[in-house]
Each structure stands twice: as C-alpha cells, then as structure tokens.
Length: 254
Image 1 (tube, helix red, strand yellow):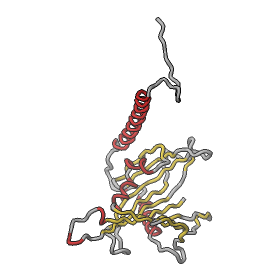
Image 2: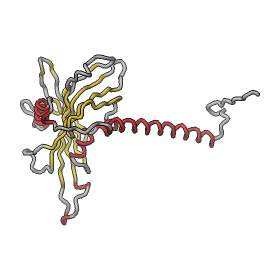
Image 3: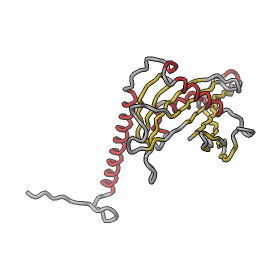
Image 4: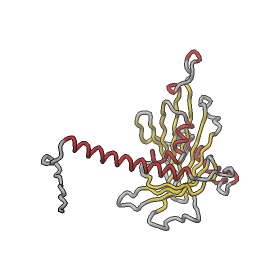
C-alpha cells in the first residue's frame, strides 16, 4: 500500500481554499498563544514556590547597605533642579522630563540620569509594587530573558539574578542585585498623600560569581520614587481613579 502525501504551495497557486487557509492560520496562532500561556505559567510557578521569609530585612547582613543606599537614592531623586550639584534638564516630551547630573565615582564620570513623569488614575504604591514584584517584571522589562530570586530576605526585600537578552554584537549581560520597597515619610511635600520608593543595587553572592559563564555582569543602582496626590471630589463624593495622580521619579546610575 502506497501512502500519498500531498504538498500545498503557498501563494496564489495554493490548493488550499480560503476557509482551509484561515483555519490553518488560526490553528497556528492558537498554538503560539498556548505556548505563551505555558511560558507565563512556568514563570509564575517559579515565583510562587519561594519559601516565606522568617526574618525582617533589618536583621540581614546586607541591611546596613540597603538602608544607606536607599536613603541616598531618595535624597538624589528629590534633589532640586539646577544650581550646584542639582539636576540639569536635557530633554522633555509632554509631561516627561529628563535630567542628568555631573558626578564622579572612583575617578570615573558616571553622570546619573533622572526621569520625571505624571500619570493619572494610579497610586504611587501601585506603581512601586509593579516595579518591585517579580510576577510583573517580564511584562514591563523588555530585555529580560531569565529571572531568579536567589534569596527571599523579607516581604519588602529580594535578591535577584537576572539574565538579559543578547543584543548583537555585545556580549550577553546579567545582573545580581537586591531590591527593596518601602513607604517613607514625606516632609518636603505636604500635599502628597504618600511617598514610596523601590531601590535596586548590585551586590555579590558566593554561589553566583560575576563573569563565570557566557554573561558579562553589569552593575547598577536605580530607584523609583512615587508620590500620590488626591484631588478631593466635590460634595464629599467618593474618591475615584480620576481624582488620583501619581508623580513618578526614576533615577539610574551605571
């Protein structure tokens, strides 16, 4: 018995009718969607199996550094524009403002960057939670390839190892850093409802030495500072999303 296999040509001479063609396309798209959903579930599963922290961050060996760097970054983020040591505007687009500040570290020029923006309808806490929480990271960090939490220090402090997609011709990069989120007191802006910060800073871990494999280790210090402002509705109505504004400040060094 001979098995006949019929091959179809693509293009205008294809033997597939329109209905068969669209069914094939739909099947292919469904398969891609299933693969994406499976990949997302695997990422979520890898996050959910973390053991709960048994101590607070303040008892961890890294706490002195976490406290120092976080407060330093909060200070720099809120530093005024212009003047000696202040931020200098170099680009703007709508409500977005970009600043830089001349600075040297160990004899090298680092030139930190600062971006400021205003978003309606969300709180500062919500924005910081999305920036901090691992389950949301692949949704906004486009260059992320793999992410692992190598230590769950506390509910507000995690130790990450991230691998980023290779951009030819540069070598692939990875980063090992702690990430810390907290609400801080705001003595500069009495109109703000609250003030939150997320600070990420490179660190070291004996099980993950730098440049041990195909990746080149990058070092970073970034912070996201968010303030919530509420425009009180008239006649004591319930506060809605349209009454909420979030002022976002993002700073990056390295």
